[in-house]
Image 1 (cartoon, one colour):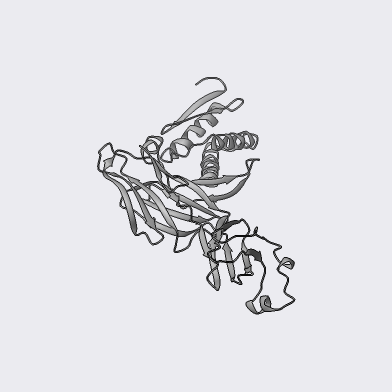
Image 2: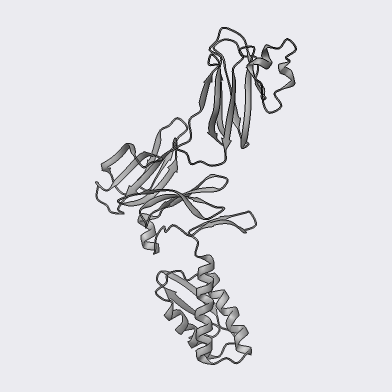
Length: 323
């Protein structure tokens, strides 16, 4: 054993712990502690540093070998539990904002090379995770750390993405649109399919209000207001804030309400799921498009993909697959 340092190997993880100033019997106690924990592959540098601090402190307290070993085991277990989060969201200062402990990507580094999953933040409080080991895709609510949506597979789920919600088009020849529900940052398009030039305004206005001789549409529109739309022209607005937004068109006199949600989960959502067995055979990989209920809408693969790793949905609705 070298002076001041020794190396502990657990699975494929190597970590070096400074033992400067510690007696040999204490070094032996550390080794014994890590041997007890050798079944657990999560041996991180933070765990080693924490146990080093504990030993430096306990050395002054003149604890026995058995006390030191028990303390070491507890310190490592506590440290592991504190950092055993498969998906962690951090700010720019490295502080933990949210975490998930419901999913498993892999259990070893070797396994991670073939069946590693993925994670994607899809809204302010939701993370979509390809939970590879448990053969599922899940959406976690980061406020409660609970599963809000789950798709169970017959193979490893290697990657999962939500398909961007299509824009919603509202025709101004329709008299009213009540409670149109969209996701945050989704786009609404108003189409002037009438024979009259018109404008779109935000505001809670009824047709009766617009029939009043004193009605002034320019007193509204504090949230949004369109340009003058000629017949056949369209105008789009992206709703980046959550809440309820009333709107009307004038002089065509269409009214409506748009409900903007900060959640991505709804019955209209669709997902891209990448599945595989982590094998080199040509009939285990598959890329699927499913709805929110898990029904398969279409798929690619089933005899063509060898060890797919991920898929990305492009803006024009196409899918790029990596193998």
